[in-house]
Length: 175
Image (tube, rainbow, N blue to C red; front, top):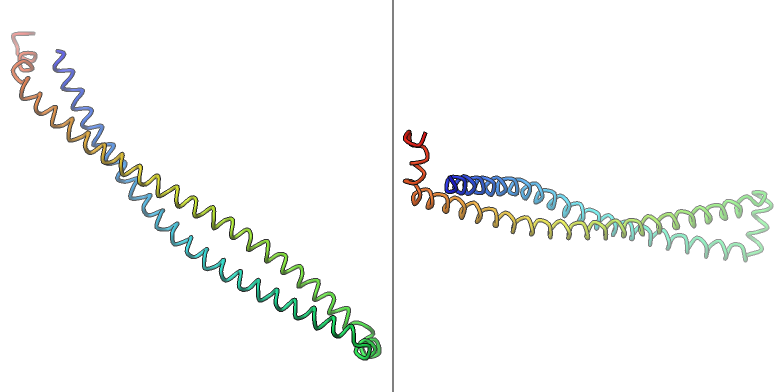
């Protein structure tokens, strides 16, 4: 009876190892797809970050030039007088408002770029973690495959070796 239980246990272990192999294979395939999608998103994020940085630098440059022009115009008494006479001082007021709006947009752009850099870095870390988990899963899958082969082989060998003693368990004489 002990041999029978041992043989059944070996067969169950073989099936369990095979089931583990199949489950891990499906998980690895899904993980590989997610890893590929993550790599694509990381590349898209990297290019978007580069575009954002370039746009921010262009905005900073434009703001700097606008501030210089405003300061030069403000230092010119003839332009100040012309603005007061013809526009009631609204020209310089509008310029100050535009500069303030430009400062606000540049600050928002810096925050967005900083946030994008942080998200990109988090994505790189997550991608690295996913690659490591995929590597571990592949190792576990190999272990399950080896276990399935070993347990199946052992159950076959012991089944043939013990066949006479197991056959006596099921013989009508023992009932």
